[in-house]
Image (tube, rainbow, N blue to C red; front, side, top):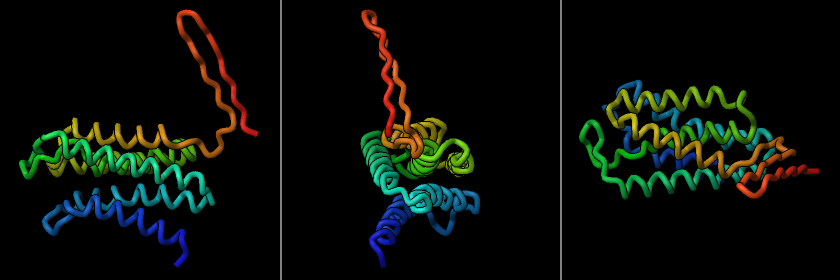
Length: 182
């Protein structure tokens, strides 16, 4: 098995391990579908870097995925918020929603909005299933989405982005920076 295949298995396994504690035989079909989609979206995002033969994108995916999981876990351990169903005190933020939106926003930032629309629809579905299963409330789901989106938007560069324009505005200075990659 190649090095690439080992990395793919590692990423997918990490996602499955992260989500699997809440997957059980008594889950509804809707909740189980949400569990599966929550793992599938980041797996597809990661897989897209192989489709595009995009080593740089793979490295960016690793960073955004790991940062997102770490931030989500730290918040879960430090914020003592009971789940709506009363099962435990690890409600905030939703890990399912966090990883789903991380994958969707990675595709968005790296390959463009049109490529990410199905992933965002799937991530929205995951959020809906977490609410419907009474595992999370709106605050948990919104925080998870924000973490997932932020991790990819800040740690991922556009695949085709060769021109960057930035402004610098302050009371004493107005500036414009133009950077073009050759």
